[in-house]
Length: 68
Image (cartoon, rainbow, N blue to C red; front, side, top):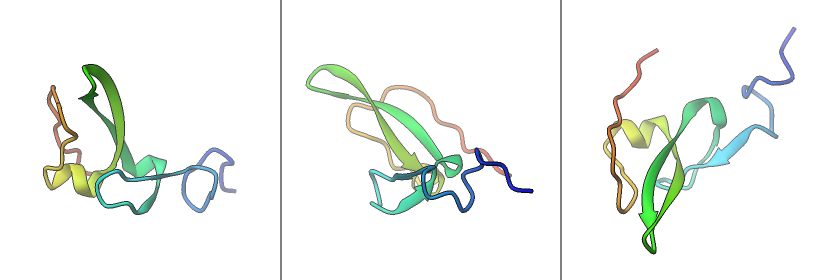
């Protein structure tokens, strides 16, 4: 039986990738920290874009790809 909290096939657990603008299940997204107007802001990005090297403006940190 599928869980109500599983992102797969659950229309409520999706987000929009900032890089490619595609609707993606939240289980396949990461939040990368950047800065906007001198303040830290977190940006939702799909794993595909993050793995390809997309980073938000003012990105500070380390992102290491995760493979499943």
